[in-house]
Length: 225
Image 1 (cartoon, rainbow, N blue to C red):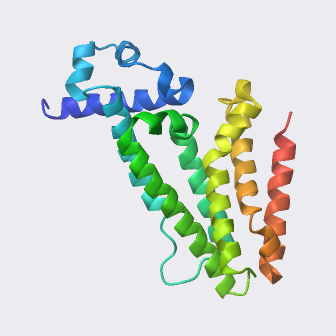
Image 2: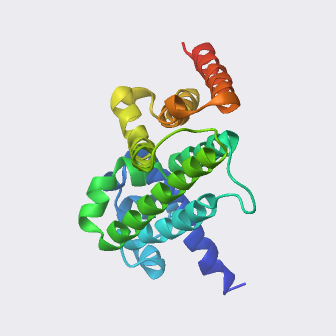
């Protein structure tokens, strides 16, 4: 039992820190605040983590492991438009769970070399996956685009997804933490990213894209105040 207790405390610190960073922004949270919220002494906190960057890096390890699982394309078959839609859903849900990384991205990268290097790798991996998804659609005659166009599409999809929550925060900061408001924001993000390839889709895939888009837009309109 004595060996398990520190591990449980460490996990609780990470869970609480993630919540505080997400709600108030990482720059606004100190180790003192975390210790007070945990109802433990700063010394107890420093037993588990050397400083706040150590906490941030530990949360990032969790985030990185989860995003690597998402960035796996289907094995044994080419991806279809529904795979792309699901991929975007899962990606936006993950971005929301770890939203402080995206909202405070520039500040974090400017002072954390580890995050700078690893986030670059994640962006490159995202672009690679987006490109492969588009190439799979082209192989199935569902998408008509040159290699240059696909490169641009893949980059644009990742750029929009990466900064979408920052855009939504600027657009309506007072509703940033409201569940329904952010559910709609994530849905809009999925649609906005997928719309990058909409004009290039052909045949039944284009019709399916239109159907999925109409359902999404109706859902967002119904939930709007």
